[in-house]
Image 1 (cartoon, one colour):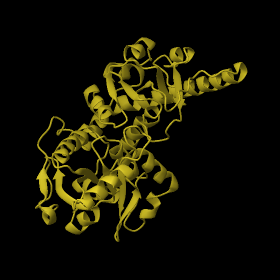
Image 2: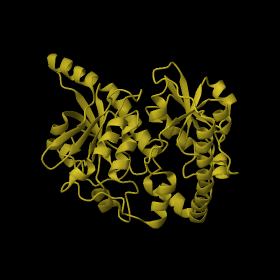
Image 3: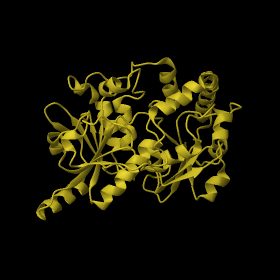
Image 4: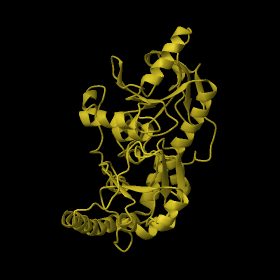
Length: 377
């Protein structure tokens, strides 16, 4: 979605119906409404289109004024093993972007079913440098971009025992704003919310949306603290978190309601920790039960987020959906393996065809062109 947004002025994201996903891939973990909420919250998404056809239809593209459809450099097939994008490829409306080698729904389901913990980062207070590999920092920087995907937008901090390190700057606009406020004798204001944000879901999104509204009323920025894997596992047990801190942080960074994140945020925030961030005027938590002493040191700033339509959704609920339908998801895994073999053959054939004919089957619009692009989720 980031790469697609960088190609045009707007990005329309087609979201398939539950029925289409069931027919072509297997049972969805989240409902259409929940998935629409997730796509609408992505800062690179201009508009989410509900119940988009699984096999991309040029008529639907034309209906929404989308000149190109974007997908990764892998083949996606329908229930019959046929390329979902062959029609738009033949019409020259298909744009290829590099496939992002991140975890997929299939990978996450596998972690749930197998109860794996091998994806966890160990104690970051003792060895936080392993989180800051060159590849990871590059990914943090990309996900911290603004709504265009081209300019800096969000700040990324890493909390260590000694200091709050800046991994990614928020960019010149925020720096100019801070300089202007300092000249006026003001400090930039921040509101803070923390958590594990595992399997980033509508419950998290709606909470962050409410915090954003409150922050706008207070003329403040939203900073999100993300707990490390060791801390989440200590309080959740089993093989939680399903996603490690690197994966969870990228999920939070792509959310349009967030201005910055703190990696390895303390489970119990303190005035000293807030002083590292700056002028934190409020700290929020969702309408769930928490220990009485967690926000004791900053209780003068603490507020509870009101109940909302997704506050019944949590990580455990999503995992329970998978486990409840274990047989169906295991069949989905088998189906994925069967389809992947077909997709490999189609990819090889496409490469061979391009080499013999000497023509590309995809268009490549200028990154600065005045075009709309469409992707799908």
